Length: 370
Image (cartoon, rainbow, N blue to C red; front, top):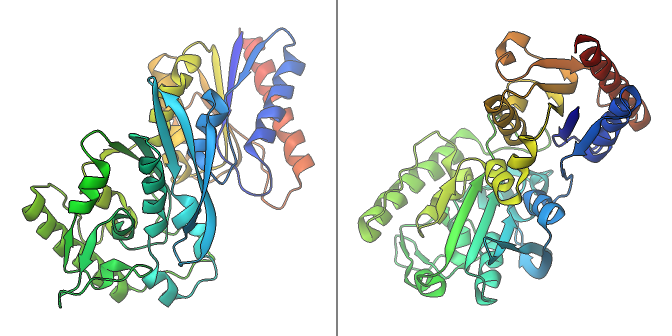
């Protein structure tokens, strides 16, 4: 019997790697002859690029850049080979992630910029890379991605015809944008792919003071205004909707420069790394998450794993710390859900032992029913 273990990302109290080890131990104690494969998982702050590097290799390129609050820091991106092409894979959270917004004032958030994202792309392109993949995760930055366009060479003007300075949220005063220098930098051979990491949760972090309704409404209205002008000037089809949180997706700005936007980051990664093929060889798939809830079920990795296994009629079980919602909501996604009844306050050893025990019980149950 072949088991594949693929835990999702956990919080600070335990790593997904440890969870995978606990599940592995529990299965092997119940069935020593089992073939067990642990899917590559990562708790790295560099997110999806680190997962790719762990799976198919690559090298990290470091550079100095500005984060969302115009503080200089060291960033990095991964260079790896995909379809025989050297490809730069960039994660957004190091520049515009929610963690950076903790303890920042509402005024600081209002003026935050995605400029550093553009700096990463510029470095990759000027290094000769023509295939760029950008992983966009959660962010509290609300400039609609215009800061990234500035770094790429876009000239953004206010309604007086003055250039909007770098280091500021350009969406506050933007009236028109000139992308000619951006297109010259990228040329016709550069291909940019944007991977969206979907979350149904609007509230991203308890420690972030979000923009008020007036600030958000102002920025959203201006993004709609700017986008319509860009559509007319460059024959685009970019239409952010008011009250859709589009100012924080950052993807619209990349769509303006002909980037391809994909809604599932893990689906893309699983295909380029061969992880989908590995899943299809399983007899049993076991994944894991902190808690079963509406938000976690929209987590990219859990949704994609369950869908891939379901297509192949592979029994899929999820282990979790806590079960929040009605099980009936997820009957079609998983064969079974097992809760350890842990909390974030339990220590790592206790959590490890409980996951090991639950995995052992699950395996013994499967053997009894075989």
